[in-house]
Image 1 (cartoon, rainbow, N blue to C red):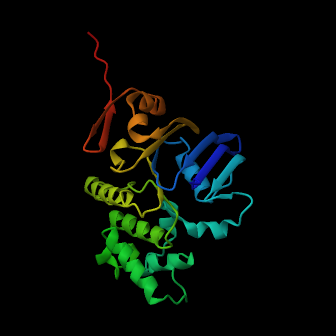
Image 2: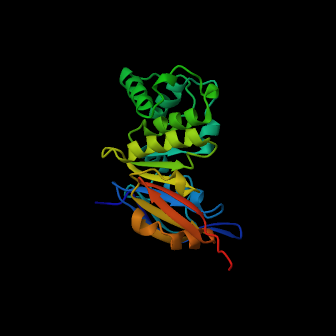
Image 3: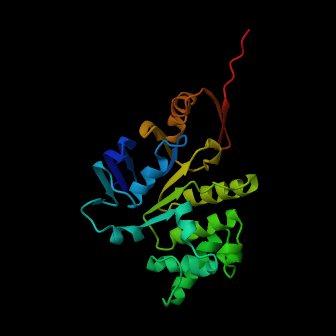
Length: 265
């Protein structure tokens, strides 16, 4: 089966800085990937390439079977669901939650004069219910908590029935309760065989939902390790990724990590 993401030696430079350095990576339609690494590792740059927001400086990037640079990205973007702080900042605070989600059907942010079919509204309500936000339909986006906004953004990203769903740090800004609620929501979504391929960006192993299948570890724009979750998420790979030794634990499908302290005798 053709990969939904196929990167070969992708490099991204901005001025003198190299943000991604010869990254090669494939994502299959049934995969659920976590991209993890420290600040400045290149995680957001990577998903900007995968969401057609950024073209590589060199290398080849194919998304959903289409090569960047040889395809109209405006035709490709409706097939990719994307949530990020940048997208959230563009949503009008006075927009109703229902309209925030349904407007994605036309690829716009902020409803203007579009007319939507009943089936569009029904799908929007169904998606909001699926992510635990069905009761928010008539609220305005600006009145929501950070956790509620994240759920609404996920529903919006799913509105076009995408083939690839990209979640750029969805847990950022959430308190412990909000994080745990969202982790469980994402775990349920990942476990749905009808859900699209997924890429989740995070700084923390504690934010990795159960049912995510693979992990890509980045440091300074380079791939440290990539592969199936259980084989790749190791103390050694974490140490190389974050530049310090860790004690890594896994319980009930969830990871936790703390710095390993060497005791001097």
